[in-house]
Image (cartoon, rainbow, N blue to C red; front, side, top):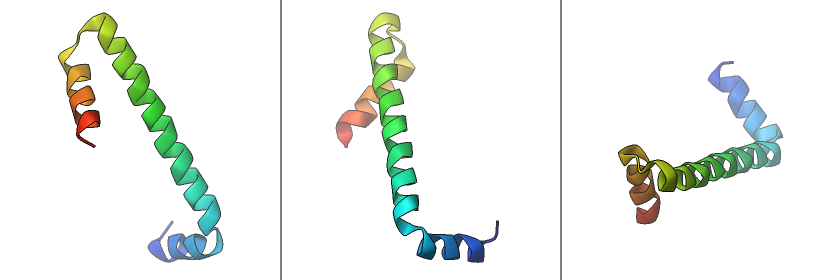
Length: 57
């Protein structure tokens, strides 16, 4: 897909794209929450980093 096609899709299906974007963000956010829950069990530094990053926002 070239950028012109993406622009046309954006104009035609703006609501659909926003819905897809929102669901993708929510999915990632759910994954981060899951990762934070796993952190409590593992105590991994990587998960602690994600938690700090999340708290900054």
